[in-house]
Amino acid sequence: MVLVSAAMVRMFVTALLVASPDDVTSALAIADFLTSIGGDTAMKTSRSMPSDPVPQIYPLVRDESEIIGYRFFAEKPTANGFVTAERVSGVCARKCAVEGGRIEPDDGEVARSFHNRPLPPRGNFKSFWSGVSAVCVRSPSEVMGGFVAITLNNTELVTKGDIGARLFSPISLMPTRTAVYPYLPDRIRSAASFQAQQAARRADNVAEQRTQEAFRRDLAVGMETNCGTVIQIRGPMVEIAVPPIRVALNGQSTFWSKRAALALPRIAPCTYSL
Image 1 (cartoon, rainbow, N blue to C red):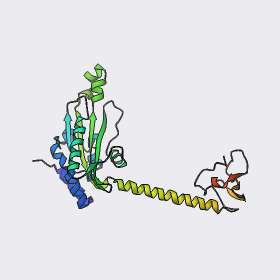
Image 2 (tube, rainbow, N blue to C red):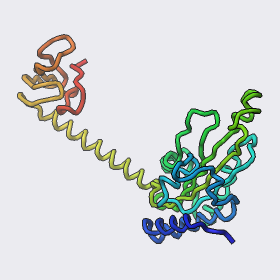
Image 3 (cartoon, one colour):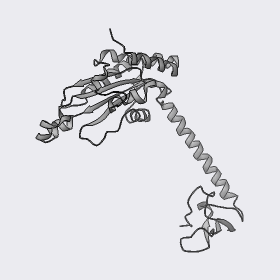
Image 4 (spheres, one colour):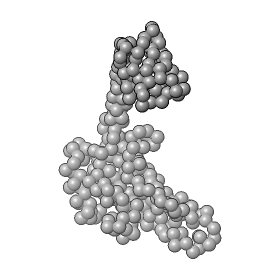
């Protein structure tokens, strides 16, 4: 039987209010991996309090409405400080597969955008905070949930520091602390959302290009460009009067430019036909 803290109950209730029923069902199913990884929910294990949070509990302070639950670990330092985070990552991946999902590639936009959000700054210490994360998806448009494991890793100091640091540094004597958090999917961007954003940008770029092409095609004496006022046109060449408040590269008050090098005012810097 798994004990659920009052804080977890509050987070479940809040999460249910902000997520759709399908999202909640998927996320709760994915978060079942918490029951099999060990650890506990005691705040003392994290050696922190919400009023003065260490990075390990930052997600509890910043993302409470997005978190389904949590587990804390305090373990003797080993050669691999991320062993618990990596173990939990494997458990989460298997649970994701059981529920019909797959883990997004680490180098993909979905995984990278989620990974950077819950992690705290590393700080300036040899002993630093870092994290392992994953996003479970069923399709490009359906995110099932995510998880992050935040670890205070003493490995570098314990295994590579000088003897004095290893023997006498308080940090070297601290346990390796890991916090694990499963996240609801509603605030995790899907691959489809990135694809839609990219498509919108491409459409904007095409529209901008067509606007510039129409502007250059319809140039007439007296029109304003990014370089100044059009005073004469000879086929593909356009003579421009440099504004009094602008200093041209060679001090000239007018210059000739290729029509294709001009743009709408304030859209692009003037190259003075260079």
